[in-house]
Every structure is written in structure tokens, then in C-alpha cells.
Image 1 (cartoon, rainbow, N blue to C red):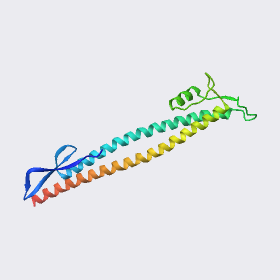
Image 2 (image 1 turned 60 degrees about the vertical axis):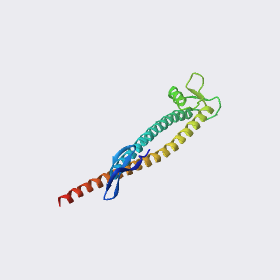
Image 3 (image 1 turned 90 degrees about the horizontal axis):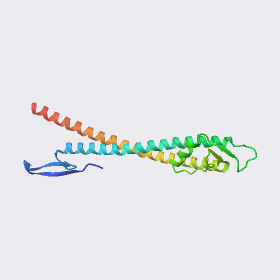
Image 4 (image 1 turned 45 degrees about the vertical axis):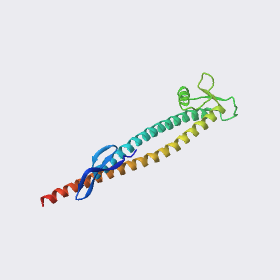
Length: 186
């Protein structure tokens, strides 16, 4: 949300026939032009900072999900590797390491895995399907993470530009004030 700058004529305030204006920034009046621009720039910077913080939270959550999915995939792949290579049968089963954790994590992320009843074992075809499903979810989250990282970088760049603009305006105001004071003394 950007700050709104609205000029407002000062009633009865004219100097040598030139109407005097004050600026209102987000409903706060009594600002000169430089103060109004500076306040608006700082308000914009803060708003962008808050949005960037929200994106940072999303990025962290996605990174955690990718880490969890990677750990799940490792457990499932280990179970696939334990299956007998010779004489493949659909009734072949293998135990998934950390099966309870894999089940609860899959449930947390809305992934359906077909374990044998009340055990950490899965049949060959279910293991293969689980491996594909978890890898797909991991790839999808990685793509979303990359898009979020680009958006976050854009917000950070906008925030830096807004702070830079505000700092330049403050410096110009200070330079103008110093110049005015030095001219009075001359």
C-alpha cells in the first residue's frame, strides 16, 4: 500500500501573490513537499518490507516441505532398493525406514501412501507409486519455491529503491537547509 500525497492550499497563505500549499500524507497534514515525499517513501518501504516478510515465511515453509519430502523419498527409495531384484512379484513387500514418520508426514502434506495394515511395510507396486508421487510433489514445490524466490528478490529490490529514494530526499532537504543557513550568514 503506497502513501497518498495530496496538496492542500493554505487558506489566506500567499507570499508575494503566490499561493502557499501544504501536503497531506495519508491524512497527516502540515508537510512541505520534501517532507511529504520522504514520509511517503518511508511508508512505501515499510509496506514493501512487510510483504517481503510474508514471502520469506512462505519460502521457509516451502523449503521445510521440500526437506521433508526429500527425507520421505530417501526412506521410500531405501525400501525399493531392499526389494528382491530377481523374480519380481507384485506381492513383494519391503519395510519403509521410519515408517510412522513417513506416514504422518505424508498425511500432513495430503499425500496418500498405501502401507500394509498397521505396519511399516509396502508392496512393490505401492512403493513404486509412492516414489513417483513424492518425487512429483517435491518437483512441484521446488518450482513454486523458485517462483517465490524471484518474487522475494523483486520485493527486496523495490524496498531498497524506496529506502534509497527516501534517504536521498532527506539529504537534499538537509543540504537545502544548510545552504539557506550559510546564505543568511553571508
